Image (cartoon, rainbow, N blue to C red; front, top):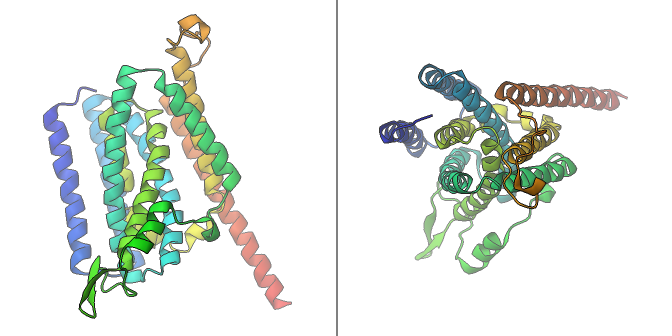
Length: 332
């Protein structure tokens, strides 16, 4: 794709405007959205992504559109995995439900900023060093193995990192959230509210997830414009999706395993592409590896959709079966 600076600028302005509208809505009326409100917003953002992909198809062809849709679906799935950790953080710090929208939106903005930086760095590395695909691929395979071993996120597995612990000790923190403000006054003193600690927890979590998601999408497309827009559309609507799914997140017990398969698949794909373009002297004498197959984008999309679909269906079936057993046991 040959994306002009004007297209980049127009895209950034339009996406920023959408985020600002979202921010203004929350700032004026913090509340816990209803299922209907959340459904409408999620449908709106998904519809925007589908329309954007159609626009890419019309202007840049089916291949670029396929890369966008595959990247968007991968990043959207990884973003849903983020929600598990967000649930744990909200529960750990006792964030009141009406304030959780603000936490999520700020967390999403932080994620966009961090991913933007990683995308720029990743694109620069790839343009200069093709062997970076070996590193990306190995990292994704390693992440996939750890994710498969870890399984379903558990509240007891969340541990406060060094920055959170330091913030608790060094900063004067109030007991209440005071309408989700970052600072408040107590007894004539200006204190930080626990909302600041929550933001730090969300921000550092976003940083960790960005380390996984950016190599994953570069395994699908190396076009920075598609990488960036796929990430933005995946994060948009995540706040409403959090409230829409609600208790359903607890029932998606096999989602982590499905994501592990997806990350492992993309990791292998990256390694194969690195072998096909190899120029490292200690691998095959610095020559391209001819036997390394090229995995087409349609096959990647099929594998990702199939894997996530199987994981979701299996999770819901297992959860329904466990619930029936619990009800049967309670009746005895």
